[in-house]
Image (cartoon, rainbow, N blue to C red; front, side, top):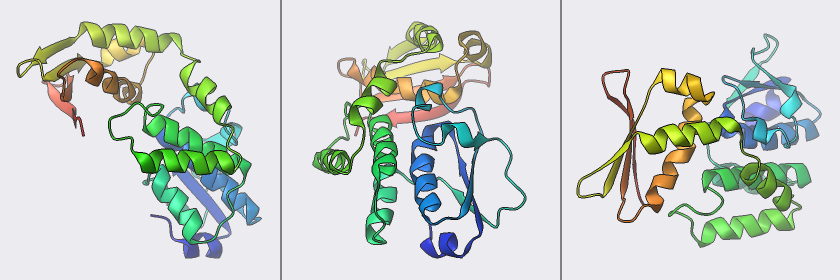
Length: 222
């Protein structure tokens, strides 16, 4: 988790993120700007264009600046970042609240995942009260779907089989199939959750068919 001391002592902070954690990086970037410090944001992969509505999307770069004297990796979830702000009495402004709310939506598949509980909804309520543009988040993340997602879903839904008395879904994907759809592997992980909507399914296994059937991830319904 982030150490506040590291941020306060640094002159130039670089936030290292990925597509699936840019929402959190955006919130942290906003906070660091309030300290009047130099800050950069670097992504190791291409960030989902559906997140372009969030603050600082245009500031993304691919190379870590040599002048950065502190690097913060986004290796935490939205609840942990929210607690970091609260514990350190950091004021959450509208931009930060919007980024955190977007993260909450993505992490919990628009509140449709089985692990959603009262704490998740309580956090959503607090963020809305802090000014989160929740309608913008919902529209941007749920109604704007790229053609690649339709193609990817077609491949995944064609490639799955039911095992273990129909309680487990085994779905395969290859680099060639990803290339043809225009999607990334991180996009596959987001879609896997939809298989839990099938009756009796309690487990979803993603297999890389062009890597000797290597298991990439094994999800179990919580």
